[in-house]
Image (cartoon, rainbow, N blue to C red; front, top):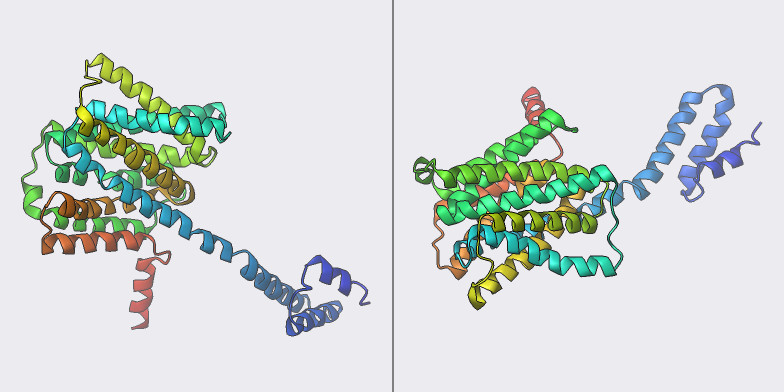
Length: 358
């Protein structure tokens, strides 16, 4: 009658449980022939779920910190980019080209000789190439916007990309953005507007720089969504290799066609371009690609709004630009909006529960 107890005990791999849990399981096996199967099911479920909680569910929580740290590091690396471009040591398109080309020149030998490159299947190869063209176009039009207006205006408008990412995700992707994303986006954009000043918004000029900054945000949103799908099947090294090569070729041909100067920038100009390539492109987008691979695209794109706050802090120390209390409050609100998107429990459901209890 009880000959099946020990095999079941081994089959469920419950030998590592304590005395109380083991006795509970044995009692369930003994009671099972009396058709109290519900009790047995509860006992097995309780013990197995205990085993899972202790050994499986903790792993994603432990690993979740790495993508967030990578995202924070990537944001820090790209925060200096608007300041470097605003120095205007090279034309906007050439600056975009050398950012990609130098980054590819550094990455390519390491990727090839370390055997980290794996040619993806045809559909994902085309998607990686498309990502390179989209990102190259994004950087090019953003550079033009920065040089023809101000770094503040260009950064504000291009950072509307989370809105485009959220809308596209809602229309075309699963899972859909949760309510916390929309709440956090609204709060973050309000913080961004407060950060740059409401008077600044009223004085926006709807010229080419304005349109290019908006276009930059749209291009980046498309890049973020497509790269998210591509990175599910392609390693970060292979993706960066292909996309950087595509960006370099695309921007090189464009610069040649538009008769842009490829030389004559001086030591300071070349140093600026190298920093853009190694720090703002290679290091930053390795980290952000890793974060995109392991996090929701909507969450990553919204977190990049923090770039504006870090850019202002860097500009304060290196360009002697002022930081007002309004900018501080706006930055705090912006970061709080980003934090809302990282809350798993819906704030709308929580508020409904609070109102029903009160």
